Image 1: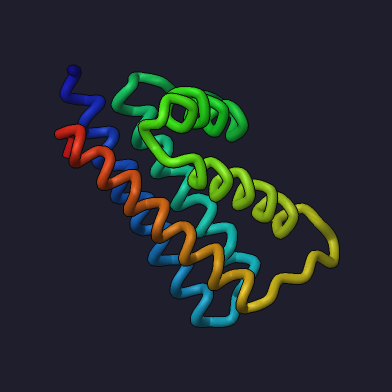
Image 2 (image 1 turned 90 degrees about the vertical axis):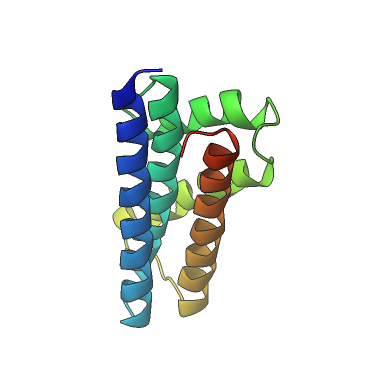
Length: 133
């Protein structure tokens, strides 16, 4: 495997962790919509770490998510519930970013943060079990 793929994967994992940390800071500061956005991007960037290993990438979020579902969920490499996590997070993030008057509670943001934290852990475990990191 090309070394730059591994380096890119590690970089994206670090970016995912940074986005998760930002989500926590925003959640604690009462910025719930922005926290949800960072939680989504933590998951999205973790998926892109997987894609880096595969030498894949897509210009649209839907392409990244579809590839993840096809190559990792449907094959059983990653449990099915994580497909729901990222799909729901994508929709909620779209609503918070683009929907007028979309209300987000502290509980909503906390739930998304916890899902993102779990999701990132699953991706890291998969990559370490696969001897990628």
